[in-house]
Amino acid sequence: TIGMAYMQNVGLGRLENVGMGYSLNVGMIMSTVVGMNQMTKVGVNQSTNVGKTCAITAGDEFSVTVGKSTLVMKKDGTITLNGHDLTINMSGEQTLKADGNITIKGAKILEN
Image (cartoon, rainbow, N blue to C red; front, side):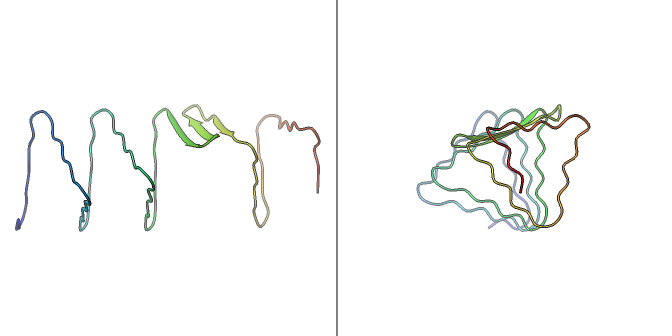
């Protein structure tokens, strides 16, 4: 038991292995700083639950890949969504606005 504070400095590297389970409980605030690269690998499932707001900021590019589907967002404002089928379900009035032309291509364009 540590009553107030604990600090550990490691000069070169640190490796920690846990055989079965690992849990970390932070009462108020947690901050992680990585100087160059970070990688997380989860064998089966991962979930994140945020109580109010979740913000992700990427400097150049943000991408999500699930199987053959991809979403790529670039810093120039380009958003590319690739997949087999796309279904959009919404309620209420929707608005699509573009400063340039809107082009729709398909074997057959159906309306209503």
